[in-house]
Image (cartoon, rainbow, N blue to C red; front, side, top):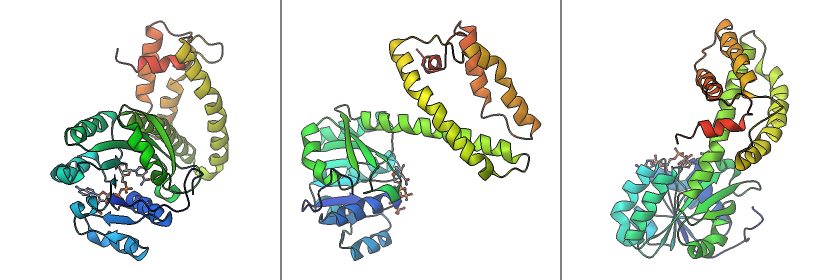
Amino acid sequence: MPSNSPKTDSSPVSVLGLGLMGTALATALIGAGHPTTVWNRTKSKTGPLAAQGATPADTARDAITAADLVIVCLTTNDNVRALLAPEADALAGRTVVNLTNGTPGQARELAEWAAAHGITYIDGGIMAVPQMIATPGAYIFYSGTDEAAFETHRPTLAALADTKWVGKDPGLAALYDLSLLTGMYGMAMGVAQAFAMIRSEGIPARELAPLLTDWIIAMTRGLVPEGAEALDTDQHLTDVSNLAMNREAFPNFTTAFAEQGLHTDLFEPLQDLLDRAVEQGHGADGFSRMALLLNKD
Ligand SMILES: NC(=O)c1ccc[n+]([C@@H]2O[C@H](COP(=O)([O-])OP(=O)(O)OC[C@H]3O[C@@H](n4cnc5c(N)ncnc54)[C@H](OP(=O)(O)O)[C@@H]3O)[C@@H](O)[C@H]2O)c1
């Protein structure tokens, strides 16, 4: 259980959506001693939670009216909007914590809709997979206009994972969440390309795995903090690995992928970006410059 979580708490809470993540969230709340009401579109998913002590609700409205704190975790925010819109009157005066993955814009729209109906809205971004819920290392970003409401419910939310409040703009939790996931997906696709490359000669991926792990950790340790510092101080000149050199070396990737019988389309946009950097006169800069080139302004 996360360090800032109490062992037991009697505040009632309702959970709407019992997919893999919603089930993990409800399980954690039951485990922390909260009277927990659960609802899911496919009712059979309430069974295992009822066996652990949750109260299954026949309708979303029944679940909503069972607690002041309503946690929602569905596939998309379109699903959330469709589910909650007809229940606005039942939600009025309660707090909705939406842990569905979405965009900052979607969070702000939901917050506006909620405010117009007298509903307190807190958006969340879960930095964990279901198996990590209620274990050390898991955390959830939260944001919303009503910080006091968040503080009221923080002890309950702490049963799920450590809580990271990131501000009163409702879009900020999604912004932090997607920023971290952006880094993760970029890395995951690089790993996929690396495995495809080594396997193109029949070498098992597991032979590359320890080397790749150490390499990514070593590169990240330098690239991330130094890149952030360079960006924030607008000092991009480097004597380490400049963009002009990288631009000239980069065709080796796509050429090698083609030689090894692999698709080249993942890396082609990166070549375009490097070309643009050099054409715009940034050849002596390091990779921190790339973040500015991704900005449309
Ligand atoms: N799993 C992860 O590792 C993870 C990590 C971080 C964040 N998340 C986020 O958590 C959210 C849920 O993920 P999950 O893994 O729990 O997904 P999941 O296992 O696919 O469950 C999806 C849930 O959404 C419900 N749902 C979908 N459309 C609905 C609708 N129109 N009306 C009502 N309910 C609807 C499903 O109900 P039915 O059971 O009736 O289909 C189910 O309860 C997503 O936004 C995901 O991005 C997941």
